[in-house]
Amino acid sequence: MDTPTTYKEEPQEGAFKCPRCATTTWGNLQYCPGCGNALDKGCSGCGASWRYFYSYDYCPNCGAKTK
Ligand SMILES: [Zn+2]
Ligand SMILES: [Zn+2]
Image (cartoon, rainbow, N blue to C red; front, side, top):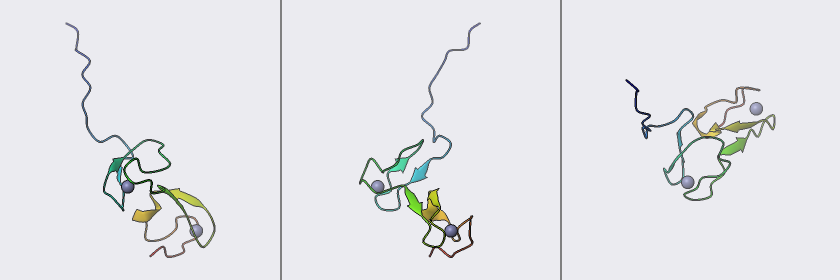
C-alpha cells in the first residue's frame, strides 16, 4: 500500500510573523511579502545581520541589547 503524498500546510521550520503586519513568513525571504519589511536586521553594536533579530533581546554575537 502506498502512502499518499499529502502536502500539509503547517508552519515550516523558520516560520516567523512579521512584526509589522503579522504576515507569516518562512524560508529565505529577505523581505516580508505582506508589507515589505526587511526580515533581516543588523545589530547596531557589531554589525552582524540576523534573521528574525526582532525576537532577540540581545545580539547573539556581541551581547548588545537590541531593545
Ligand atoms: Zn510585514
Ligand atoms: Zn551584535
